[in-house]
Length: 110
Image (tube, rainbow, N blue to C red; front, side, top):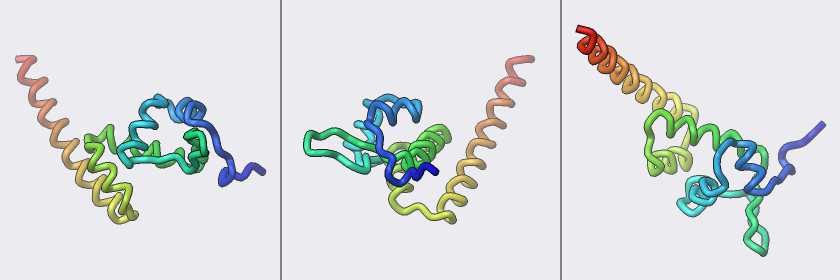
């Protein structure tokens, strides 16, 4: 059985697994949004495969319109209640946006 707790990969490999650029990982690290689990003496970044879920969360939060500052704050203090509340708020916001776009499409058909 493979234990992910000790499976470290380079930034390049981790970026490929996650489907994001290595530069994005470096940007997230510099802006204290998401950091590698290990950095060696030469400055090489190593990510634990268990960190994949955090990248997925970041990408999901970006896709629903949160700024990187909001994402950083959310990740620093997230709880299951915070996640539920955030998703509920964003869901309502997205539903309103859809309604507005549907109205616009109907107006354009006239």
